[in-house]
Image (cartoon, rainbow, N blue to C red; front, side):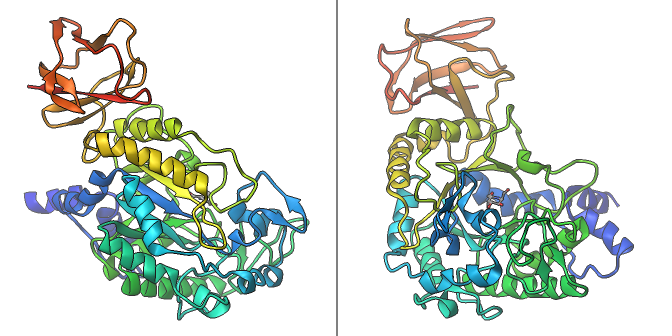
Length: 461
Ligand code: FHN
């Protein structure tokens, strides 16, 4: 009896919900109950990784943010929506899409050298175009473009070769699906739109279509994560999300699926509501970082490096390397992963400003990666004035953004006893420190190692 209760209790998020659903709706056809230990094993690489590359690449890179001379400060991959481009006109971009400069080796090198451990690429975005050799739809890069090659196949192979996890983004919203139409004032019924409607019988048809695409994506490329999106459609329900979640896990039991498969997500804040259990293994903050830590919760923040996901040739609002590195530290100090985006050009190049910034992140990660990978959230109950903290058993990593002018760093007490302190880059040279009731004061060298963030390690007992 105890074992059963434990199983039911630990099969959180979905197992027990599924059991309820099965009772509620017999059409659910995949059962997935896992113990906490099994979930921890499945999630472990992802929790260790902390840093990944998001890639938004598709036909929208052809117009690159401009259509009939019309530009917008809206995100580039939504051009079919904000430029009100009818489906038949948008399809013409396929004839112009020929990324001859695409080099899987170079893309994976850029990600790996930045310190990234996984890659999530758009297999299909809202425009419905498959960036891989799909047998389910000929609206794909191999059959519908002069390129006639499958870049996803090359990228998956190279990522595996270089030890990076390969993952897919997949949009539930599909502006190209024949049964979908737009019913909005001033919009062409076949253009893009935040929401679509499906003709009678269209939903069953489309769900079948999605499943066939997901089956070929999983069986052909063996992705480690499925990053769903576009789930905010009126015709898409939490029950659909649960069902799709189990369908995908039945195809690949150790796959990890984000919380945008169902309807639990609370907008850009990204975490699932708590009024019931929702489908998904991790929360998805977008373009934001939670104010406070979420220790013990699986979540990731995805972010652009400028202000668009898909390439826009005139978007030069690039974040600085300092902001990006401090975001990575801030997110890790709150127990989350950072999924940082690049939007390659239609030629197949990652924009130079992105490459430069990723190289700068890589330089910092080369020296300080231990203070990010495999860490958990800061043990301090309040935000540190001088920076952030991450932790491992018996270790705390202080990330110092503001170097104390008097060299004295005051660290508040948090219940552990400091036994040793040193700069992460010079472990053999211990730092002197004084203990008091309200914490320890470290004596730091006059100069910081890196003004963006210098890491001090505290050994504790
Ligand atoms: O509409 C998409 C958008 O194009 C982009 O893919 C982001 C990435 O997380 N998600 C949606 C907006 O929330």
